[in-house]
Length: 368
Ligand SMILES: [Zn+2]
Image (cartoon, rainbow, N blue to C red; front, side, top):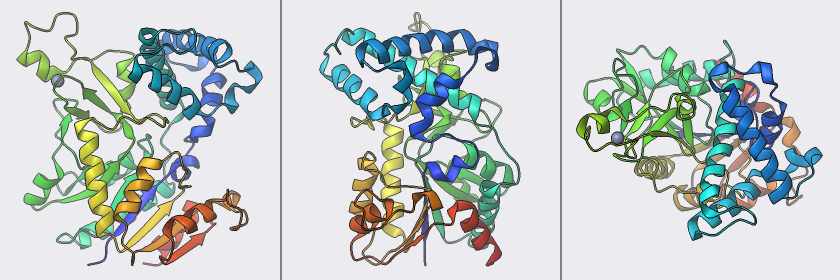
């Protein structure tokens, strides 16, 4: 049985208004006071002042050039200092944890503000196409989706296309419904009940997840970017609250926190649910006869995904890379995306297209 693994990068969501990683800082500073909901307007602008001070005083960057700073160059020294309990220039280790939390908050609030669902786009068409294929192959496992994105555009699109009596979106880890009235059925249970699952492995976390650091449960919902709640409503794990009522003074460590893996060279993938996702992603890659990269540039900074690919992609797997016309530079240029892919995948059969993901989705849906 042939299996296709689709790997989604930022370019997959870009045309649906999701900012690229290199645009996150610019977008944070572009937000105007009147644009945000009053629930989190105040904290956003407070955090932004702190971030501004950090960029100016600690990083020594001119305000004009804030948007040029790589996020890896912000997060990596912060993470190194936190792990080694060191001060980062003028900031103590304890304050650094707080600062990191605020920068995460800025990104989450900004993304929540920017990401809106658009109807009839390539993401909806792609979701319909995949669900159709899945339904026709109930007893097989024809594809899996691996995403490096935090946005929930495809999650929502799949979820709204799947008739809930028939199938589930399967994050390939243990999930708990965030809303008690919302059934979230694990993928394996769905299969056992004669339903189908659509595997969506989100390697860098997701805007619709919250994690309990106490019991390690991952709370999940759809259509709502609950990562934001960490900064707004500060929810507590209802199961820890039930089991340990008397012990939970103040928060007892049961405050739920967002699960977004930030751009850093010191990625912390120790969370048990993320480990499951990464392990399952390795298995999916090993089973794939074809891997299709959609809007993904294989950056060196994604060294964790690169090692996963190096360890698991079969020698005889076909590699298809779908990029945008703006990605096209000479394949001999060692900074080009094509060069990165060709040198990485070596003797494997690899093909490139520069027509963009929308054209790719149009092509596969028309070909059926
Ligand atoms: Zn808990």
